Image (cartoon, rainbow, N blue to C red; front, side, top):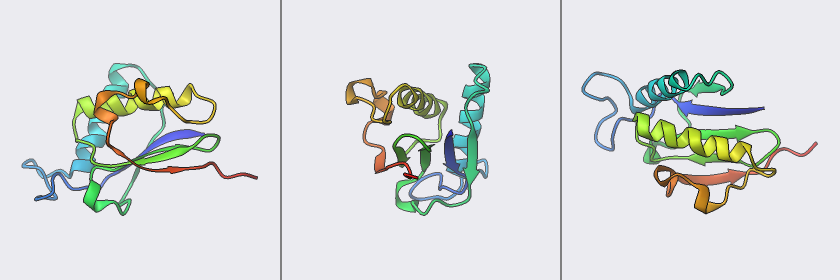
Length: 124
């Protein structure tokens, strides 16, 4: 199973938990991802939300989770449609690999510098 897990409580910025409209950065990124997926008719991508991923210094946090390949924790994602698009592009490249290791040259520019940890799949 593959999915994106997006922190719903991530701050909007280093200075403010909430955007001027009252939403958290996490809520904004979730909405951006939802809109990107809808625009692309991507019903195949599972997006789950999680309250606090304990990565507050690197908000907005997204986990690219996979039970067969490496999973990744990302941070410092901007709560924008462009960032959501880059996350989705990387997620798709990840899904096309056997191990979950995406060659750096295939990384969208907006995903460079956002990776925090790589977690191997659980072995039975």
